[in-house]
Image 1 (tube, one colour):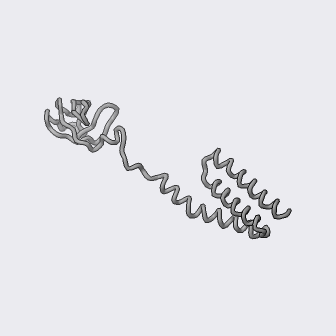
Image 2: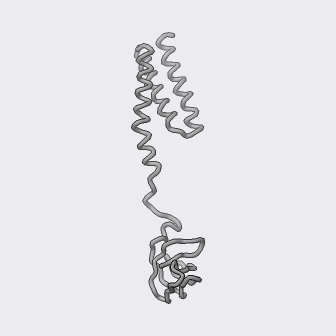
Amino acid sequence: MNDIDAWVWWLVGAAALGIPLVVTAMPEFGMFAVGAVAAAVTAGLGFDVVPQVLVFVVVSVALIAVVRPLANRHGTSRPGLATGIDALKGKQAVVLERVDGAGGRIKLAGEVWSARSLDTDRAYDVGQAVDVVDIEGATAIVI
């Protein structure tokens, strides 16, 4: 196998590693593909098989060791902007109709919501400010 054949085979290997990357969405395949491209460059520069394999292994392992933890950390971070019912938790509301463990009405974010007290023994009178601690269906749970 001459030098031209070697770099072509490395590029074929890189393309073959790109297929499972797309199908499985596992970024490790992409990192191996980049390692194969680096080995193709090494082969194109005229190096023998051993340096080609070493470049492939070193580049692939380095990418996995550096990029994978960064990607995992980025993937598990929560967005800073709360939306939907998560945005309503922690907001203050005004009691429109007496709220107790059985129910009542509040004005929350400009809308009228059904509400009930978190503590079933506690009641809140009209005009009193309450805090929303949770939303269950269409009912705000307040304290």
